[in-house]
Image 1 (cartoon, chains in turn yellow, red):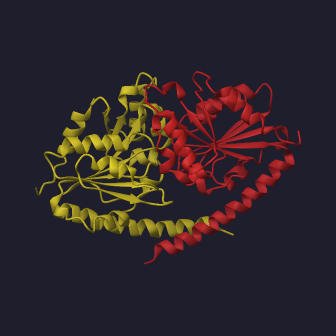
Image 2 (cartoon, chains in turn red, blue):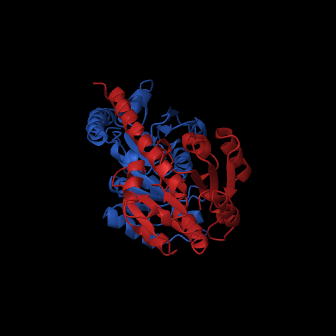
Image 3 (cartoon, chains in turn yellow, cyan):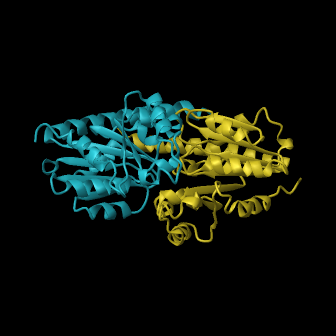
Length: 222
Length: 222
């Protein structure tokens, strides 16, 4: 019995199919002038709260929307919808990541020309989402101070494939005895030159810098 | 192009193969009189520190050993080896979970009759490890207070397949504004009757109760 070679072969086909759909999505986003930002992290890193704060800050000035992935529950969509932005939940069942086809299907009912920024919150998982292009412009990898400084070294693929790293829950930095310099060094070891932002959605620390970063992505056509 | 049906079919074969190896491992562990405990959680939930504390507490009274899985680095094996117990790192590369064959290969050089308790620390991932039986007697799912109370609802499969839930980093409970009763209710909603232990490897809180639980698993043949 040789399951591995067959699995690899099929996985390649799935990934190739995903890449084609992602390329199609990226072209469509550019055509419509939408900046697309995806968020990946472990479960419990604070993606939803961070995104909630981001949407609330942007909603009065931009047309923002969000897709949010989870294995189960629509809780995150309910939380994010409080910001006033249109939000759609993607329930993946047992699938450990979002893929480009899920994004495409979720966008079917939306009029994309009415959106300036689309945020995509992936399933909480520091491994599998690394392999799936969603057609985004920017992928942000989040890690919270309570997870420890070593995560970039232990999950290198997801940090390597990110465009920006966001260290969250900075308000817990001291309580968690988090060594920020060591975390920065580990990020740079895995992905030299990667921009790192430090934030707390709770206290607002670093959120202005994040907003400036996001606004620098303003779609050219709008 | 129909990638999904083929993927499902191949995945079934891989899982079936895994189940056969896991069954073989379980029979072997019983024959040798070893109690096997696996730990699953998100990245950064404190599995390694918890296991380090567990091994240190047990090492003078029992013959304990550990296998530890990570995508990259041997850091955890180095940390755990400080306890004095034999430890082996399984580096999975891009694979998001341990499987039974990895466990079997890792045990090849060990004389299992010399071990009372074997601990297996899985890759940090709340999704994929749920599908892979490792031949363990007990699977403990860990969640830290900083991850939020909703994790059982959002990752139901892994809580449903666990034999005990361990809430870690209780020392950060207040700083993280963690609602223990809500977390307990969410665990019970997903897996009614699941035993829940609350611990802090840092302060030692709850570690005695965990030790009693582990010692209640004492292999019958020794």
